[in-house]
Image 1 (cartoon, rainbow, N blue to C red):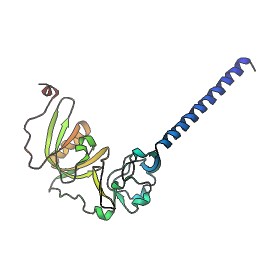
Image 2: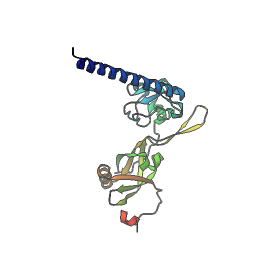
Image 3: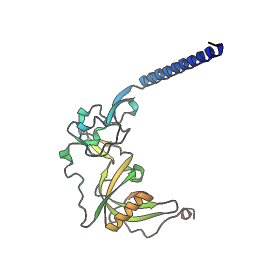
Length: 236
């Protein structure tokens, strides 16, 4: 065997050994860093969980993970037994920690948030980021302004739109000792409206091609007659 071949093989072996030592060092450093942050075990969502899913069916959608104690969400749960017999009251998204506020017993949900839909109206749902839904502070029965945005203009297309259902919004949970804890909204919300058929077409088209923002608007709020706004209008 030539000296060059032996030298090449030795270099490969040394490189592999060095890589293994670096990986080992990094892993040990991560473990030491985690230990210094008082890690706690939590349940984290690994796949999208639809609203209404029984807790008993969640084992395939969640996994245990260790996170620093400072990152643990209040009212988090570390075992599905804590919510046995309950169902999810909102969609659960990958990466989200499992919290008690996202569950309720089926009996408690009967009729909850029910809103009467005007005769002849359509119910239609859009999915929006929390920042475009009043920070998640929206409930069934509220009325909203429906803003549409494009690169060139923004317009209040619909007013006093009735909200019939909100999934993933801010919720308040009553603890066993009677205290109430506010649970933050999910990253995205599913908002269902009751609208006339022509407006349902507008909502569906906007969800496909435009930006949508919602404003909390009282039923007795004034009608907007100012028209659309363009970037040029802002700097006038």
